[in-house]
Amino acid sequence: MWRFDKSILSQFDFLSIILIIPLVMMSHWLIGEAVPALAQKQVAYVGVAFVTFLIIFVLPIRRMSWIIPFIYWANIALLLAVEFFGHSRLGAQRWIDIPFINATMQPSEFVKPALILMLAYLINKSPPPLHGYRLKEFLKLSLYIFIPFILIAKEPDLGTAMVLLLIGFAILFYVGIYWKILAAIAAIVLLFTPIAYKFLLHDYQKERITSFLSEKPSYHVQQSIIAIGSGGWSGKDKEDATQTQMKFLPIATSDFIFAFVVERTGFLGALGLITIYALLILHLLSLSIFNKDYFIKVVTAAISFMIFIYMGVNISMTIGYAPVVGVPLPMFSYGGSSFLNFIVLFAIMQNLITFRYKDMYDKSGKKSFV
Image (cartoon, rainbow, N blue to C red):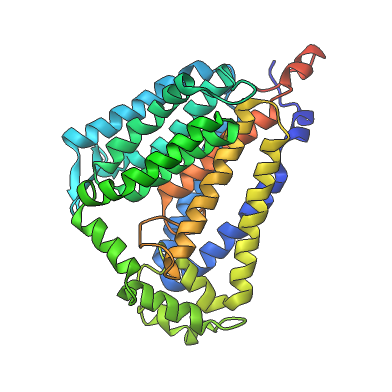
């Protein structure tokens, strides 16, 4: 009879969970102040994510690794389905209908964990040599990054596509690429950027960049900066947080929630929030750096890169240091898809770490539940 072996949990990474909990609690508090109905929905999202975490955590992921390519290509198929069967909102074709339940899904959100798993699978199967991957292996791995990038950018959703591209190549550079390839990529980026701006970007995307580079920020960013500046050292009471309460601050529960944080909790609250993210990123990198298992190394590094990119872009956007794009504050902004993505990745990471030595338990005559 199969039973749960408590000794397995000695490998469980509790610190990452401890660091995530205050993010979820603070997010619920702020969203509840701004729009109570959304806070109730967010609780439902957290509940679904928790159940999903438990399900993924008990799966025999290493034994089921053969299914990872199917997951990746299934997500590519969904992106192609958006191209042919998707419907548009605000000029972007990013959603497809889910039959029978009158709901929609955005496949580009599910590609991120699928790509990270695919890269982990391929790198674990064929680790980099001493001086890093050479051109043939690099191009092969790059292909898996460029396919979803092109399909998502075509929707158009350049923000999500660029995040995917950055995460994918950050993973490759992290595990090791031959230095001549790095030099060639830097040269290509410098030469290709002006061409991409002139011929590949849509007018609204160019307008966002122009607005960012202009001396006067957009209305959204102006209101965000006012909210941040008014927070002071320790923030304002709920009744005095006029930027949020009087609806001057746009999208206060999602894209511009960092400005809401600073208005309510001030510099100290913002510092505390950034410190939690920094500790989480550094902790994940430490798990990756000191691990020779490429499955664990890639997944933990990818999550840390993903959190850093999302946090950096979102906060920079709210203070006028980056163009306004729809990148949420990780595990903090309102929304189910982004939160679920991160929890799925953390569940995969916890599974890989916790059950890494499960064969040791099996040899001693004990039985685990996977």
